[in-house]
Structure formats: C-alpha cells, structure tokens
Length: 312
Image (cartoon, rainbow, N blue to C red; front, top):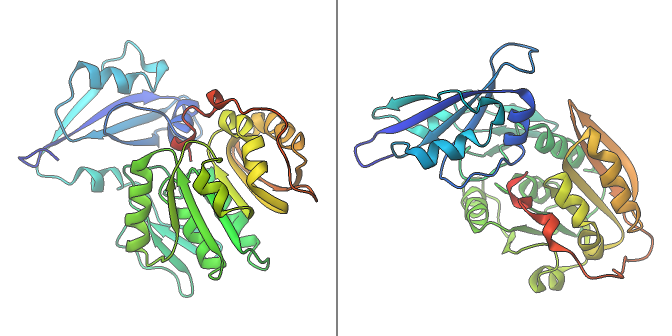
C-alpha cells in the first residue's frame, strides 16, 4: 500500500482464454497482483481481470494492464480507490482452499482436514497458489507417485515453491532443488519455505537448466517443470540433459492443443509419455527419460525460454 494506506483496483473485462493466459504467466512490467474471475458461468467471453496496485495508476500502468487483455482495447478500465485496506488480502478473497490428494493449499486462515499436509501460499509476487489447473495437476501427479522413490529432485521455474515443497514432503530423504529465472520468485520461495516449515531446499536463480550450480547438483531422478509450452519445447534438450537415466519428468503449463508439440520435443530426446492428467483445456504430462542419459548434440537456443519463469 501507499504510505497513507491507500491502494487501487483496476478492472477490465476479458475472455476465458485471456484469463487463462494471465493465470499461466501473463507478463507485466509493473508491480501488481492479478486476479481473474468468471463473471457468467460457462460463458467464455464473460470474465474479468482485477489488478491490485499500491500506487495511483498512471497512463503507463494502465497501458500495461490493458495489454494483457487485447479484447478490452478501447474499453475504459474501472479504477477503484481502496482506503485503508490490505490490497494483497483483497486480491485473495476469491481463492477457496484447495485439496489435492494429501495436500491442502490455502492463502491463509484456513483449517486443514485431518491428516492433510497444509501449505499456506499467499497470492502475490510469484505464480503458483495451486489454484490453476497446471499446478493442481502437478500436485495430483506428485501425490499419485508417493509410492515411488526419488533421491534427487529439481523444480524448474518454481514460482512460489509449492511443488518443491510437495516433493520434499513426499520424499523427505531426497535432495530438493528449486530454481527460477526470477530472483523475486526465489525470495518468495524462501519466505514460503519458512512459513510452511520446509527445511533444506536448495534455491538457485538461473536462466535455463544448465547453470553450473544446477548441473553440479544433478543428475536428477525427478524433474518438474511447470512453465509454458514454448519454453518447454525450447528447453527439452536442457531438461533431458539434467535428468538421470530412467528419470521421471513432469511437464505442465501447456494447453491440450499444445500437447503434441511438447511430446514430440521430448520424444526427440529419448523420453516417452507415461501418463497425462487433463484438466479443462490444460494438460500435465508424466514422462520417462530414456534408459541411457541423454547427451545433447547441438547448442541450445535460449530465445524460446522467454517468460518461462512466469508460468507456472
């Protein structure tokens, strides 16, 4: 909030497709909490974007928000001044607690069901409260693998750290690495780890998956990448290269219509699909790495990574 406790909410209409793109990592150059809401049930055109900001919006800020919803170009945004309110708390008001398998994810002040592992993940500076289909699908996949054994896990594009925390809970003896291109996401993950009593996760700020610190800690028998389809395709050789022979690779952040392209990119690196969890328009893939470790044969092209950490 501003010094006098004032904040602002900026609202614009949007479509479901625009809302899903925002939830999966809509890139914005300002400090804002973004929330999308279905206004009319089962109407793909009737959604709303609410952006909560700490300073009075100027022309540049409004332009950055409008750019996230192309369908709203030409529509005057609604701007509401919020006096003496906690803008982050307001932005979380519509987020109900989420139960996925043994995991209970909430944004604060919730009582978990008996026996659940509760994670308090506040909405705000990094993606991954668990409410998007990509993140909840990954949680379900991880929960379903509880009977397997993993000793070295990496969560690439960790966001809030939620998936790394879930892995640390399921496999407490494993080494867990969480990495993100965005230093803010790593700061958020560190804070969330403290809040949720998750010790020992190694946090790395890195562009891509082949930073020296990431490679030195590998190879990994479980690789998690909840990012976006474009970066997933571009990074296929990188992610396959840090995976151990026979490793499990979880991929998310892709629409069902993008599944074939993502699957093909990893098949070229010796990976095969073991399972698919489809949630609405989104899919989560569980792959098995080849019986022998993948060795890249060509230099990497980093341009396809743009925005990968904002995902998911």
